Image 1 (tube, rainbow, N blue to C red):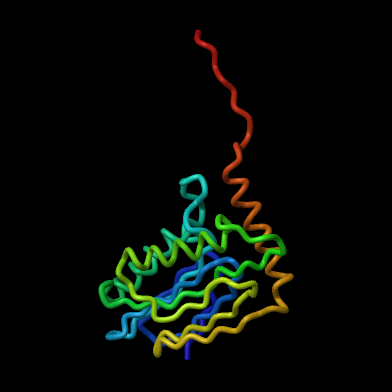
Image 2: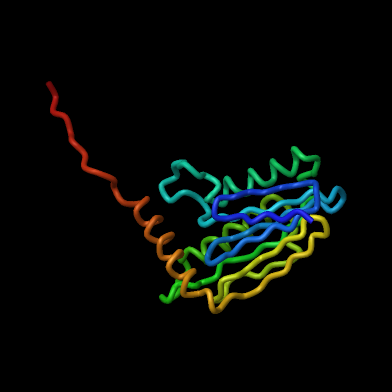
Length: 184
């Protein structure tokens, strides 16, 4: 069987049975499948939307773009949007700091649930939240997902998550100085 590993910002869809794998901290992986055709795919995003609202070099790092691209890929392969079913994973609070309603994991979980509800895509299974990283294996042919919680990897994931938090904060900060021009 084909196997593919995806990382932050990756989107994969196939009509050929494939095992898609990823590792998640606060990020979300959405597994979508058209059960009639067997066409399915997975994405891996780190935030619901770019903090400043702008695009960037990898827009699929953000949920809105990652979800639309995944749905579009499935449709181009012959799947139908109206038949899609979802299984969603991630949103782990792996940083060693207090959780808040506006934390990255909480925002990610709210986003994916609201997006799927708005699109009318039923959620068949989910493993969201908690304090563990996750290793996710999605068999696109059967729709089966296996999840392993990775408590031992939390320290390593913690460093990656801290980088994500810093990146999100930098996007909100002014970049560089501004020179105002006087009237001539």
